[in-house]
Image 1 (tube, rainbow, N blue to C red):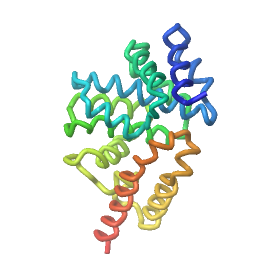
Image 2: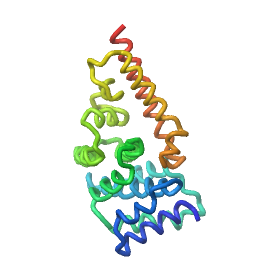
Image 3: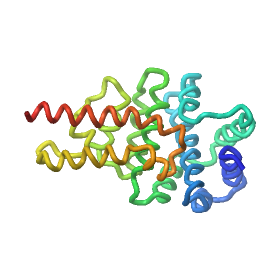
Image 4: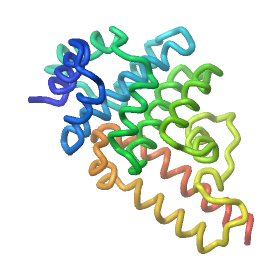
Length: 226
């Protein structure tokens, strides 16, 4: 059974009245974690698209950049999107369910938020309502304002990009602590670690932007303190 068939079956269970928490409880372990991750991106991405009132072809293309759909899976993928459009639940319910699924393991939640930022920037405009939406999702995930700003700086060109935000450290932290944070983030961004978290293989390409931002932040701090 392909991932798209499993996703469609899970969404069909939602549409038939099965609770979201119950469905996600069945998807807690690999490889089904990948199904839950993809459902969350589809559902939250659809809700976010409503934030600026327009679903553009670029946004659909951005999703396809992250999730490659083979020709033989087009029918299953179409079923997924059709079910998602039925508005089974509000975005807060999806965000809380995915948070409960991963608990304190916030790596997959950061991966998910980055996927949503990628879709939001597909039309080249970061709409104020998208910012409100993504802030609310980040808050449900338990992310601090600093961490949210750090992720946003990876995708939104005009956003304030504080290197300390990107590395999730205080500006007055000693260099040893900052170096350790940088190394930890580099390690967590490795493709093997991301796949172990349940991130679909195609979505790992989003880590390229994260790695660039992490290394640039570390270089900026080194230059500023040298």
